[in-house]
Amino acid sequence: METSQSPRMVFITAHFIGKRLFRNYAGPFCRHDFTRAQLFACLVLREFFGLSYRGTEQLLRDSPHWLAEIGLRVAPDHNTLWRAFTAILQTRRVNRVLDVITACFRRAGRLRLREKPLALDSTCFEQRHRSLHYDRRCRQMQLKSQAKSGAKSGAKSEEMPEKPGSWGESVNASRRRRLRTMPKLSVAVASSCHLILAAKVRIGNGSDAPDFDNLLMRSWERANVKTVVADAGYDSEANHRIARQEMGVRSIIPPGIGRPTSKLPRGRWRRHMARRFAKKADKKLYGQRSQSETVHSMIKRNQGSALRSRTPERRRQEMMLRVLTHNIALLAAIEQDKD
Image (cartoon, rainbow, N blue to C red; front, side):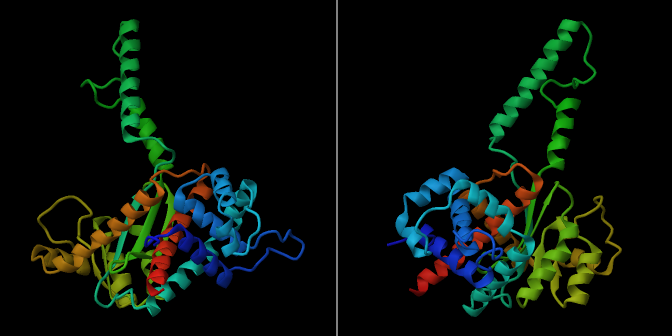
């Protein structure tokens, strides 16, 4: 008996969705070896297992019965998959896939957004496969190297910190460069079923507040959102106005932006939030925000916390493919339960 996230079911479900949304071929004069739906299913399978393009090609060659399920006789080679990655994972196609999957969950009665809120959160991915221990050891070795060079020159290095073991200026500069290129994923999650209704990807570890409008609007268009919860990174009077006055959605965000003070915030809705959080009036609803953190944990645990792509554009596409793979795996589990 297959598990709730059977690779075969994920593969077949991805192909089924691709057939509904994508044209078979890019044009009449291109090669007709593989359809877009078939290549999309192969890319989802690659992300599901966390493989390279060559590894995916070898897996498909060793699984002819899987290829037969989607109408393939031979496996696409790794160069074909690499080109299909850029061609298929365009923003408009990704949004259409999210539309269809959300509609499937809505018909199955799994969203339950009247009972439980929409949860927003963000996370960052590693740019390469390096453990935290390895990064820490690199910093320690760099500091030791600077200390030795300063001792040999007979003068105290200006870049070395006063306390041993703390960060030097060169280490901080390296960290700033790394944060400017950090891939970041923000998601809006239906807390009842862990489905991602909307996602925003960008490069750079900046504020979460500007992403609130886009995430909530996309989710509101796809489902009947009644309440949205988010952490203090999304705190903004403008975000409250967008949710409550323009969309009619109740927003619950702790007023944590700014310097700590005993005074109430000036804005109407931020002041309202400060009073309600002081009384713990929204404790039960706000506690559902942890479901978005659970989704980030599921993605990183199942698909890895490091990206394999090298350029910023392909990193954005890889993060969106991980979102789609997560949703398709949930949809495949529902379809399997029906059978």
